[in-house]
Length: 613
Ligand SMILES: [Fe+2]
Image (cartoon, rainbow, N blue to C red; front, top):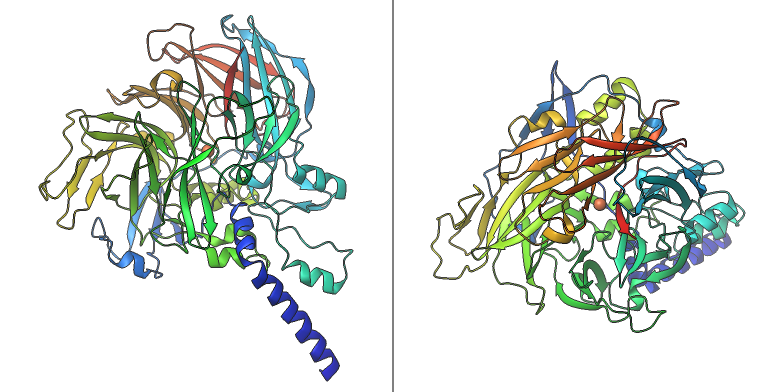
């Protein structure tokens, strides 16, 4: 290479490195705001006649921070998990494809009857556009947010949908290509830029996406759509019009927040978000007051109640939700790890940030309990064997313990499954993807709160006769917890359960009996279930070729019984000419009351809420 070219190359490289170093902290913060979650595959799959055998190799990346953590169970070098395999799964690709929006309300065709007392909007969120021009997103979570509304009034139902007018959606639309990076898709540099410009763009600070496609949330009486980045959008629940963008970091020192906040009956909200500063990463518990200070108020008055240091500051855990009882926030630090070094260099390496997230079962799972009135982190140390959780079911206090119910997977590798190429497979390829995906099962943990030096070692500290969960103190003061299954034997046949919901307004944080969820005998929910945690029995609704969404419980006004109400779920089908419909089940009997058929294509979505009129 001639010396002039060498000098030029060195200058470019030095400027690039300088730019990267100068922006390192901001770069890290910005990147972290883009993250939901995913896996690095560590399993290999071998198929038998009736069963898939799934062999998990423990990672060799044990860090110094985990060397003092006891392996809860003495795990063999290879842990084998067996489960029934499924064959001949129906192709669900049409449920993961771009659809047109339906901005004006359209009538639905009612079959059966919709109770007249249900008045309000079922608001749902999820991806509805997966490409711009010739460029396609890679991951289901990258799809552009499509907002759905089923308006129920006096026994009738109308439907409408609108794409969230996020900056990502608008910029992608305007350029007719993907210009905003998402969780599993790295936006390519502008081809119109010079070679130098394209090279330097790898060192630019990426903007976190505001494609809030995961859930509807409420703060101070306003409806927002949220993912897990620093941005949310206020949305009009009646028109689905996109209102102002809210930036968490303008109100409180966090770089994002979950899409699953908890609420008190007075409207006080709690959430959790990570921060990345000069002291490394932290987990923060946020409290948002219920009242607006003025009509333009967004998140004014939000404050960090408590800040918790990760076990490993360079590998904080990913979390999707958290638990809340009457007096405590329960945060689960699980072995799904955000590798900050990999993440900050992801753009440089031409990788999406999803590549920096991994399941690392050399870490155990750690429960943190925080007094939500004082922000004090309780001194107890509660651990369990490694497990992954995305959605908590409920938490309550009883006889000095926190009882925590959640959907658990024995491996945190599921999310890479949800690449679009996997979801759109057919035949054996689709079966293989499904059979290699860990299932989620509802489990109960009991955390005894009053553990001190006088607490006996080696004894089960769970005083609650109604649960077989165990909590045993070790000589070093750590309390090791084992779960109780909240489901009957044979529950594997329904594919486990996810998208849990309860009668939230009356039973969140309280001892309860019923929860609802989707069974997963496919990569998306294929049944609805009601589980009785006292009798360990369940009721199921399913229809061949139908894929119901997360069940939302709506109580009958002034109801006394926990399950007096209805379940609302949006059921979609990949079969041509088969209508999507809003399903209304009697929550007590789990029998269908009615359905409202919608003559439009609808993709499978994520979460939603019912907004009463
Ligand atoms: Fe979620």
